[in-house]
Image (cartoon, rainbow, N blue to C red):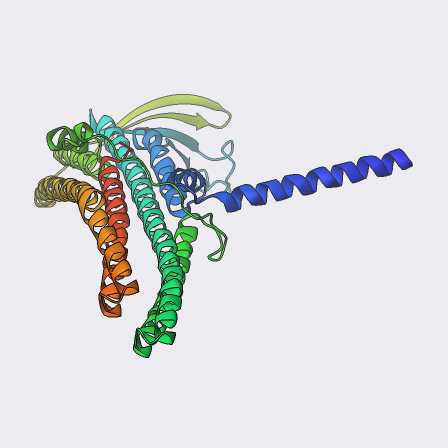
Length: 423
């Protein structure tokens, strides 16, 4: 009995530990975009729906190219035997019974065209599923970058708040010694209030972004997320060559792939419309039963006569128009995708140059200006307004530096969405 209790207790502790470990692992996602993408791959409902539709489209290929089901017809002839008996439904008691087995056969090539159309439509569905995932992944990457920016802004705001507390103490000491006006102390306190208000705003924005990303992950809106600590690394400039990326986008963009499948499907639909000028056949074989034995056999061939030429010409013109529309839609998509690629590349280049300028020039200059202003205020050579301006400059430079880093990653996410793959 004691051994049983020990075993049950050990099992409970193990299960409890596994549950806590799973909860901790789920709550830990969010420190990097990769952890979010891995989680969303198997859980995002929008992507799962598109995958299911693609699977459904694939299952339409076999029936599209299959022959229609055969038909069996039975005819009871002379059920009263020339009036010699009451009506009967027994094949052995009627005059004769004809059994006809019929099979519809489309004109040569129609089945192949229908199968090809179904295959191309399945390819288009797969392209739409890939495009859905590329869109979901792009949104996750962008929101993660925005969360990183908010996290950095919050950290910087708290640092400035601590700095303003120190500046307030300096102003109080100078005011107590008659070296500064009381207005300096009040302005320092006002700045602190503004900082705390900004923290509230940042917290609100962070919760909103977390709710959006949890929706993409199919988690509760208030589910915890780890603070983003890692930004995705940027590829080297050699990988961001416009001509090379343009070729990759034209070859691999999910939307273009889907549009190309639609063009090919429209071409096959046009060919099928022209094939409808020719008749379809029905072949049949008929054994005829007299009483209890089969004594006759008949063969039958039937074909439809395509006389409604105005209807068929209208269908052919419709297929040509649909093909033109599919080609024009593909061209419009290609133009839009290439324009977005060029815009994203320009954005990455601008963000990189801005970050270099901020880190190498503006930020050091702002720090020197602030240190000089702080020293000047302590000696009474600079007023408090000048010190606050210097503090705002250094803060703005740091915020812009984080913003440039985040903008580059958001542009990278846009490029990868267009490519349908990571760089």
